[in-house]
Image (cartoon, rainbow, N blue to C red; front, side, top):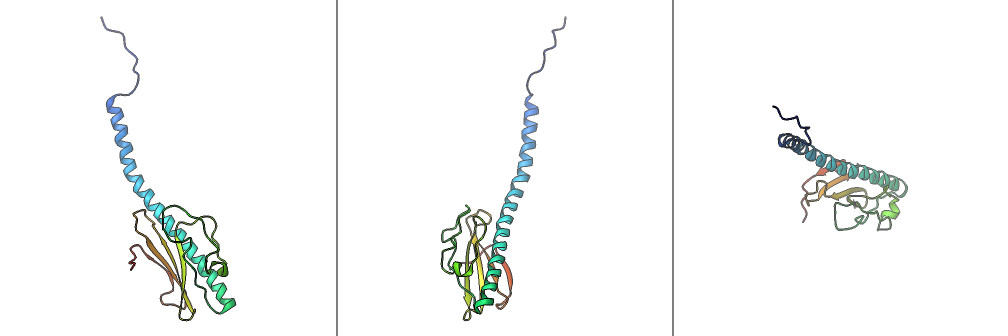
Length: 156
């Protein structure tokens, strides 16, 4: 005589291992893509803020016939965390530039040739590897105007 059929409860070991393997493959594809998109968003933030700084500098120069240099904002000590903007630092009050919310990069404006052209700089760790990337905007009066991105800046 046959034994009664038992109802099956749970999953077999093969089923659990198959699902685990599929999740592992999907994770190995998704995590690097997420990291690349995160780095891209940090670079985009820096480029948008540098463009805003450049617009503020051009507006200031239209009224004052010179550009204004600024202190490093939000100050030294780079980190991956978003930080508050300090509009009271040297030059930023005169420039009148205040980004919305917190920022992930440190920004500074340098002027050259008796304040006839400027270079706005953003420094941040865009990919979380501990190395800061350098993103620059050079004013139209300077050499090579526009935004420049150097993922491996050389600091002295």
